[in-house]
Image (cartoon, rainbow, N blue to C red; front, side):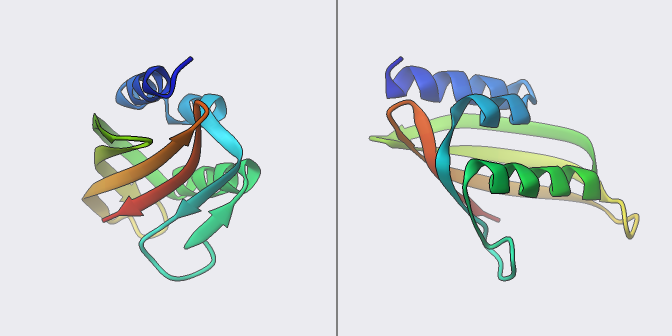
Length: 117
């Protein structure tokens, strides 16, 4: 599978709302995930750590709607744009978020994901 094929398959899974399946299939074992924030989850390294961050996020939020657009590709990088409607479980606050993810793909695997919001 070429990088272009992998990008298209990854994006298709995200568009269908199958985020964990996309990560399971395409995240490299040594993936680096960088969030636009400070704190312990600002930079996470390794597939298991990234899955732990994702598990925490989904347990802390009730997702009402999630839309993904893209990919917008340039070489070995591409952007996905997300619109997310969630309620924070702890506070009950409902909010709509727009986020962009910049992904770097090598040998058919995501080696870095970097989020902007």
